[in-house]
Amino acid sequence: MPLLELKMLKPHRIVMDKVSSYTEEAAAFMRRRRHHRRAFIRVQFGSGDAVDLIPGTDETGRIDAAAESLIDLS
Amino acid sequence: MADTSSETTRPNGPDQNRQALERVLGNLSELEPELKAAAILGPGRQVLASVSVEPGSQRAWSVAAAELLDALEAVREREVDSAHLATDAAEIFVVRQGDLALVAVTDRFVLASLTSFDMRMALRDAASGAKNA
Image (cartoon, rainbow over all chains, first blue to last red; front, side, top):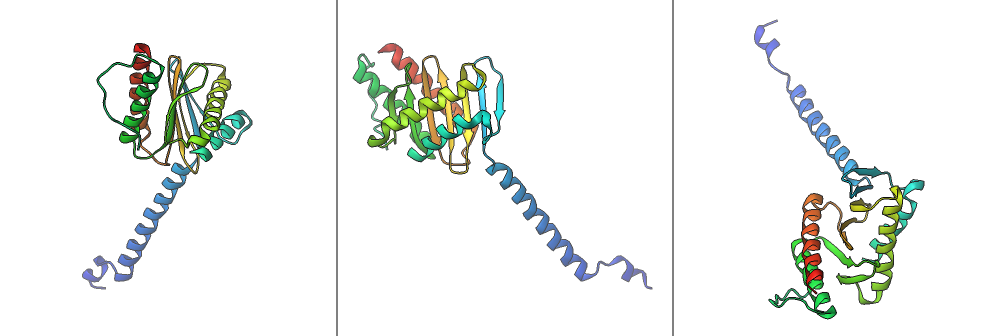
């Protein structure tokens, strides 16, 4: 087999690389978007420490309800 | 858009104080185009001034904001300095200074640190205005 033929990328491989890089980009974008869209509650206290709470739990029931009514009224 | 006319006189009564607080909120809404509604709550969790809150829903808004503050403090039974909540629909920022609290509802995906900073500065202005009243 000639050496030149071994070194050259086959055209379909270039296309496949391009397509797979685009799909990877799209997947990363969707992951970031999903991460950003996630609801959260972050509370900072007077002492300087902070706590992250997960909405929809028993602990945050009152907060969720108050926040929802506030958003509905705005 | 809130009235943002600048007056050089110091607030010296309840009405002037309220006007000063509304001016502070007006400035904040100019800085934050994504701001949906905001209010400054006083010591008894009553609304001292608000911006972009419908006149008919001010009472309900103040009740919901007071309930939110109470609920945030009830989580760890400690005084809350600030809070940031995000839902699918909007984001809520809470900043406190002394007896005053500033609660703001914004669109989703705002620049959180910038919004918190602007709110902190606005509340500081409001606190100094209230002290001079």
